[in-house]
Each structure stands twice: as C-alpha cells, then as structure tokens.
Image 1: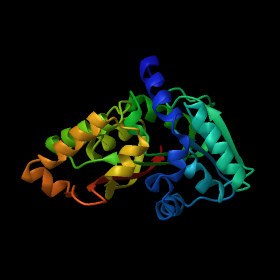
Image 2: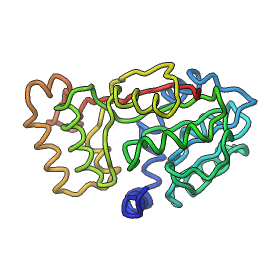
Image 3: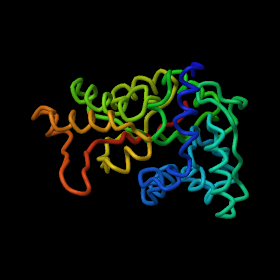
Amino acid sequence: MSEVLRARVREQFGRVPQEYTLSASHSDASMLERMCTLLELNARQRVLDVATGSGHTAMAAARYVSHVAALDVTIEMLQETRANAAARNLSNLSVVLGDALALPFLPASFDVVTCRIAPHHFSDLNAALREAARVLQPGGMFYVLDCSAPDDPDALSFIDEIEKLRDPSHVAVYPPKRWQSALTAADFTIKKISLLPRRYDLFSWLDRARSSERARHLIFRKIARRTPHLAEIFPAILDGPAPFLQSFFVEIVAMRE
C-alpha cells in the first residue's frame, strides 16, 4: 500500500472505530455464521483475519479455532478489536499491526485467511492475494466478502463513483470475473463465488464514513438521476425517513493450491 493511501485509510478509519463495532453490515451475525460454516472451521486451525477493522470476523472465527491473528493497518481499529475481544472473553485472539500487501508472517503460517468488506481499499488486489496465498498452507482456505457489482461496465462505474464520494480511501469495486482471474493468478482454486444482495441504509452508511454534506448531496443526486438500466440493477428509495440503495456483495471461498 502506498504511503499516501495508507495515511488516507488510517485517517478515515482511525477516527471512527466504534462506528464499525456497531455497523450492521460488519456485525451481521447470520453472515458471520455463514462464513464459519462455509469454511468448516475447527479447533485445530490457525486463522488470519486481514483488515480486521473492529474485529467482527476475527471474533466469529475465534469461537471455533485454535487461534486468530487479527491484522489491520490502523492502530485505533486494533485497539477496538482488542477491547471487543476482551469483552467477549476471547483469549485466543491477538491483534497485529500490518499491511495486507506485506503480511508480517512466515509462509504457510495459517490454515485459513479471511478478509471481509476491505479489499476495495487495497491499492493492489493482485499483491494482496499473493500475500494471502503465501501465508496459507497448501490446501488452506481463503474467504472474501466485499462490495461488488455485476460484470457490467455501467454498473461498476456507478457504484465505484458512489463509493469514492462516500469514502476517499476507496480504491475499486471488483466484479466476479475480476476476482476469478486474480485468484487463479495467485494459485487459488475457487470453491464458491456468489453475488449477494446488499442493502445500503444510506443515512447510517454515510454517517459511518463521516461523509461531507457535498458528498451526500452528490450521492443522492447520482442515485436519483441513474438510468433505467442502472435503476433495474440498483433499486433505491430516496424519500422518507429510511432511504436505501440496493447493491451487492461478492462472497468467495477459495483453496490455496
């Protein structure tokens, strides 16, 4: 990660760690349990959670495995993770300051690597995937959940612009085909890849990122003026007390070859 982007990420997330503890998307118990089930987590495994944020993924995995290393580039997020884990009496979770593009671990250190709602901040997706593969044992499992969109140039451009307006540390949204090619190049075999509906509750989503009034105005205007084609892909309601935009997550389970 470049120093400029690293500073931007730390500034963006270092000021709001508690918001991510409370975030419905990050803390969704059903999605976290789904992840644990898909990975078939067990008590013999060591897990690395990359870009852990406030630790929801790491804490979910810690209930099933031997040890979880929760890594993030932002100190304030790691402090939040440590506090959240302590509140749950999780003694098998450690926090690690580090960058997804240069993981501070030896090769084949982990049985499972997870990364949820974070890769869209990575300056080099291919490098991050190579690092995930490097620290995984052969046959180890990799789980990803992140914002995404169909393989449609207009859809990708639309959601990318909205994400960037909301959060300046956003880099790119990757569609399923881009993930498939990148994972194959990094020596992963894809076991499952799905595009799942994701609902942005706009007020809480914008509040969490501390988006400026100008950014909020531009986002609402862009949604309101989207084409019929984009309105079909991204349904929305902008009036009333709970405006929302329907978008997508990509969910991936892959195996290190």
